[in-house]
Image (cartoon, rainbow, N blue to C red; front, side, top):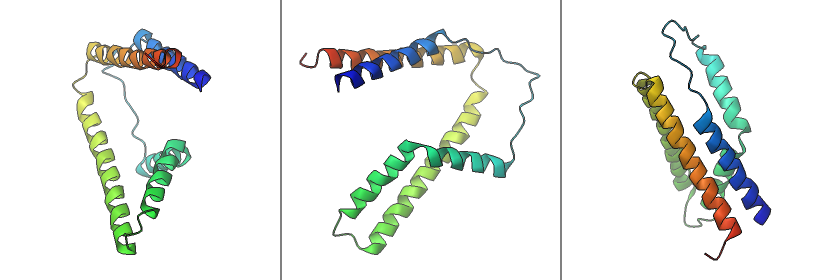
Length: 138
């Protein structure tokens, strides 16, 4: 368990430092970004989420939680899953909508600030994980 904490903390530190040192590409006004076809984008997103182990663990944990609720009848379970799927889908749509809107407001210097702050935050959690692994009683 101690090795896992040390390796995880070092990985977080490495990612944080790479975020801090990474250069932000300059904004090219003439750059044309190809728009992927909707079917291809859908299949890529579905494929990435299909092989992501965290998505599988999320749904397995939800299914196990629902299965131990003995008081829930079949319609309660269906309502729960439909509500959960609707919430996840709605939040994903909101994230995509806000990301599209936010892109216009972030200048290269603003992107660098966000990137450095994210790097510092990741480094903080890496150091916290290392500290908790090396000095668990403090």
